[in-house]
Length: 271
Image (cartoon, rainbow, N blue to C red; front, side, top):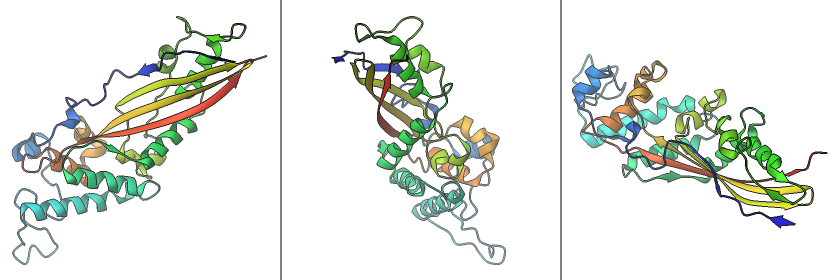
């Protein structure tokens, strides 16, 4: 049995981790005029006018609207944000999305991690069984094809290496149809940065055992491209989210969502 010393980092995206300079990490950077005129977000809430603090109700036309202070307006907007987002997290990871919104409400901008998110991340990696798209299968094939079975050693080559083979696959993210209803599509959706490490490789006769660690990071925040996308622009929940983050009088801080998964697998020499 031979345990090979392998380079632990086998792949990393060009997007870097903890990228505070990313557009969707900005907050409190827009005026009311910019949000309403430049972004076309005049109608934000169906409950309260964030600009004036006037509460909106079906009886507003018959009586003087109630005025809310900033703290009350904020609470009303967050409650509406959760309520309007309900269809996106009705099935599956409902508590995960609620936890993320509560983390956003706290306003500190600290990174977020959760065993529920780690579990979903690992499940997504393992559930991809396509030879074309699975990065895990690409890693397994790279190891297999790089083993010299006579000397029980592993090495990469120009034609068979981790970076090249993983680059051809689809890195794990939450963008499939079911993710729009289990909370993951709205909680995470894409994964901004990914790092994959090979932490263990053991070759024993005609078999090998390996362990890889995936680390992913996304941003719980919206940028101009997000809110100007037709898919999101006319959805009130996203208009509220964008305003809570970017209006200078709110400025709730976006944050990094961290996820990781450790996966062990084995393979054998092809006869």
